[in-house]
Length: 176
Image (tube, rainbow, N blue to C red; front, side, top):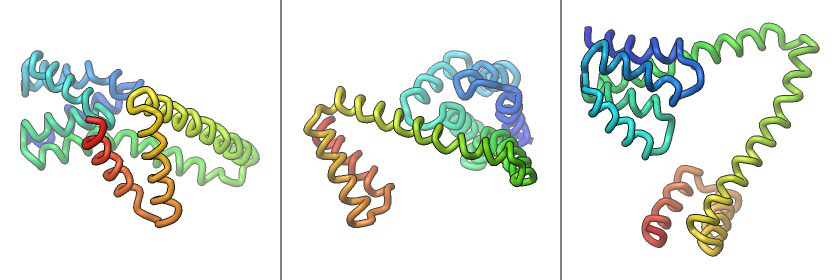
């Protein structure tokens, strides 16, 4: 029964919430604190503060923590699954619809416009990361990490996860 309650506590806010993680946090709080009483408002606020300090989407971090706190590893898995399944279902539905009408001229035109928009968004994100790196780590460290990462990825075909891990270690040792 607890797994079903965890599923509903995170599925419902994510299916009816609009605007991403920060927009659904009040809905999750209403379920976790108000409806089920798994934690108090203060503990929820502390969990939210901790979740905001860590990378990745806030809703999945909150789901993982609350699920683990309530029902262990299985509870964490159920809560995280309930958090991502609404987006997954909507994405599969949209992809099914696009696939069904893939020969339509409108869908083809839309697909042609999506690629440049994504390219611009990725360029903006890259520039944003670069500027943050410059302001936080400085020019020398930013260039050193960037050049070493590029060589590792392009020349030696090192898996990106290992490159990120190496950059984190470097940052912890020399920038922390």
